[in-house]
Image 1 (tube, rainbow, N blue to C red):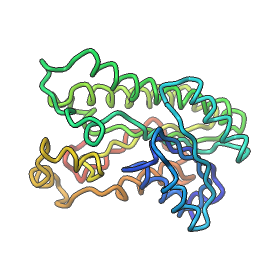
Image 2 (spheres, one colour):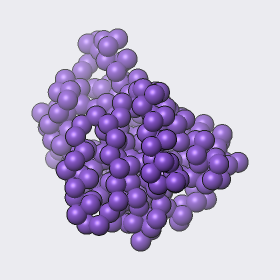
Image 3 (cartoon, rainbow, N blue to C red):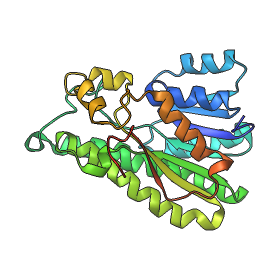
Length: 253
């Protein structure tokens, strides 16, 4: 098992990609702290039924108090923090069906929500775990960006701008934390068929997207989970400051 006895925090893990990450990390032997504003009981139950160890925390990643408590409670429970996966994000779909908007309809509220959650929230989670990783002189942070951050899509510019910010933050954190043997990377998924993406089906043509890919099949959550596990594992210890696009070749980076 590639993550045996490692302690990992995964944010936004109640559903979608976060749930896929949690289940895959558990299968790889990690002990887990799962964080979300949504109910985590069903995900935790699946992991515990398979013999995994899990702590669940209701966490608002835009709250410095909540993210500090997330790190402290993880350390108090498991004695260390090896991995942080910053998956929690504002996106369209189930919670925001009007995600796709022309630029002239974007409001300051749209910008505030996406930048606050996707950029500030990601940074606060990183900042919260840094002291623990520095003390143990080892750690791995994996941020979840998006290939939308490469091309600045005008259909959801607020979202793509926020994910571009996550990429820049990844490089800056990698530079700052390298002396402490902490690597920081990002995975940039293409269009993944999660619950949120299916809820946006009226705004996206799935067939057209698959046709634009070099590999002609839909990207599934497990495809992204495999990349995240690799970057979180010791196999990727000498990889840092990198953005790994997992998008079936829809965008070449």
